[in-house]
Amino acid sequence: MRELTLEEIRKMLQAANRKANEVGKPSTIAIVDFGGHLRGLERPEGGRIANVDIAIKKAWTAIAFKRPTEMVRAIMMPDAIA
Image (cartoon, rainbow, N blue to C red; front, side, top):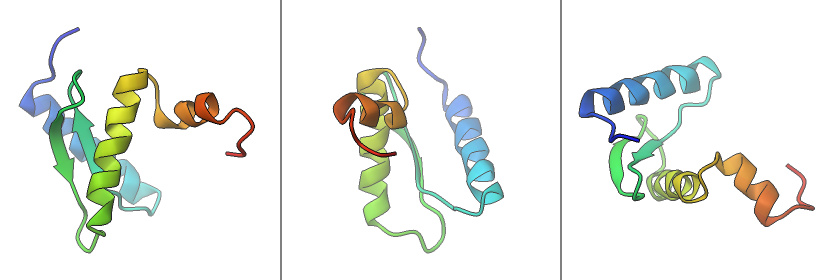
């Protein structure tokens, strides 16, 4: 695997923001590298500052487990209701 370029990260942030706005849920978006280090972050106007830390930790969790965070919940809490 290769490292994402800054241009790719910017495109990913733009696409994620478009999707969040389409579904009516502006969201703080974080992108991390393979080591879990932050590479890109955007918080929408008026977004809560707590969401920055949450987004970074969710991105870290996804790369650490090599799967989306929604799948991690099923692994960590198999009897949890999604």
